Image 1: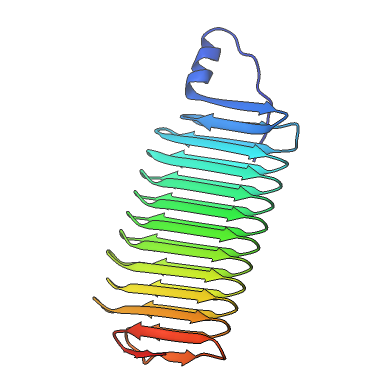
Image 2: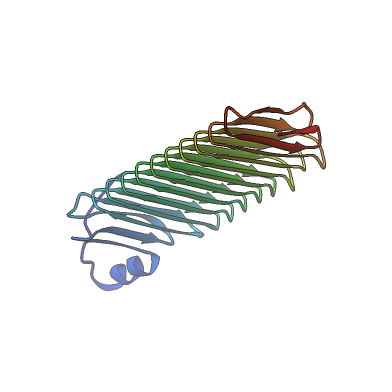
Length: 258
């Protein structure tokens, strides 16, 4: 990413630049906003920002506290990135997509939206989040307190991944009407995958492990594990539940356990 300070421009050139985009640097960080062209800036606190638009499109980026934020948009895309306290945020939107990335407190967040996709990634406190959406898909990834979350959706599918307190969550949905939702908390792992018009949901809490997948039209798999338990389920294979002193539960079109 290139960086430069704002310059005072005169006459028509100044008015045109203000209309198309603006970069602002101050003691509070750096801000960049553009509707045409590449705007870069840096703040006295070590922060850097970039907003790059290949018209039509909208991009804005804000960085604070020695952070880095970048947003890029083209062909009617809308991208927004925000980073604070030694964090990195990146958002890219094309083909009427909308991408939002927010990274706070030494975290990383990246969001990519293509062809009317909607992607949002949010990471807080030493966490990492990534979201990717295309062809009308909706992807949301949220990671908090030393966690990792990733979500990917396409063809108007929906994917949501949420991880808190040193946990990992991953969701992928690839077919029109499919849904994949993963939720992990307190040192747990949750994975959900949907590759047909079906629903996969995985929830893990308190050092647990949950995996859910579906691949047949109308199928479903709902998997829950808590307190050290482990569970996996799909819509085509018999479920597995291992409580390990906690709980493990599966409800699916291929069978139940727990």
